[in-house]
Length: 110
Image (cartoon, rainbow, N blue to C red; front, side, top):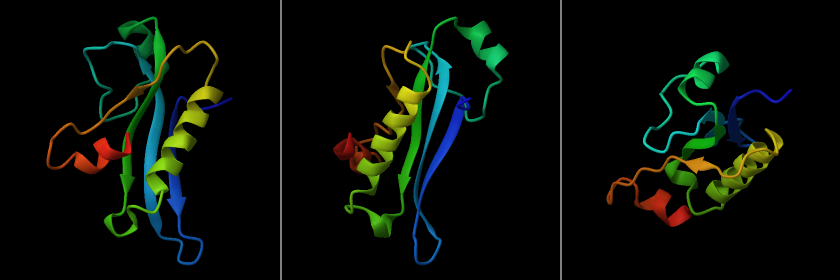
């Protein structure tokens, strides 16, 4: 059974430091809402919306490790995890920082 909330981590093989992370979860498919900053129990998700879909959020790469392909690696891993969560999903939602100054690195990645 694949959990409905997953945190994926890129770790340095030499130091064990976390270089990047991302979350992929199953959330209610409500276009006007983003997922809350905490894990919702499945029964609450089903009350909010009968339709569910994978939701990618909090894709973070340590500033000193950017432009090394870790963001692309994390996104590919999130997409793979989303596919393994079920074949009924028609789309994946991506939560992105749209601020022109703070979100520019994320916007270039996606």
